[in-house]
Image: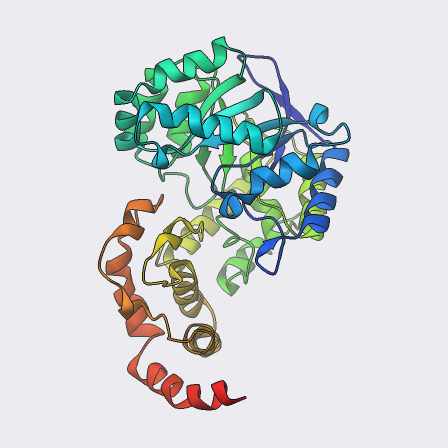
Length: 396
């Protein structure tokens, strides 16, 4: 395992961190045995940073780590990071209330790396008005946290303002080969790094989009390389090639993926990619931009939808239908959306409340994009077929 240094505290962090937002599940809950084996196995092989948050796995992630993972000496082997749910903070007292709940669930006295979760310009302004700066200072003064940071989903101009407003130790941004100029992006990465703020990367594989069902046009480009890498390795290597990336977080939940990521993390050094390899990556970026019509990463923050629409699945299916076999994905979507619920949750059941858009870290005009879904995979023919089939499916 390779390690990179945090400028402000000297910590040597593994270049690969373990993200606990997408742990393996069983019957809708975290699969305790499998997740425990996966995380501890990664720690045994050098991963020394675990990232979670208050809402992950419906609030179960922090408790799972505290009850199981951080026992038997494993607490001493890792830095633990979690996040204050600023979207739930309505008054100053809420800050300490949620913080203490998190310490209780994690069963630890000191949180190594604490973040304000999902900041943008508006939420940062709101938090400042509630006294967040004094709160953060007090946590450090009282020795309840070691390092203060924030995760960001917003405009790069707001990112820079937040960076300049406080003496941060680290930050967390979304970055991958498709999002080089999106949100904080490369510009934000450099801005933070120049101020000795460690930068941790989330969504390195864009919610799996860069490794699942690679379009044939993209595969042809990867195949032109002299040294053959998997799509995941290309994406990770591009990030680790950047000297000012401190760490990449991966939401690993498949043993083979964990093995692959750890193997790569033991090899890579900054500036290791050749000019030809960088050119191939640039060509792949251009090709994806032509094919990917809705920039959804599948993060799931829009799951607050009161109508029960599975928005990430709708957008994922739309993109896949455009890039791959339309009939295959149309049929899968019709079955999942039209037949698995008592009442189909088509995008046309949208209540037009806008709640999903207020939670979307990608700032997607979700209600507007529903029109694409409806014209491509929720056509009157598809819905009519589902209506005919439903009585027979229910009687089985």
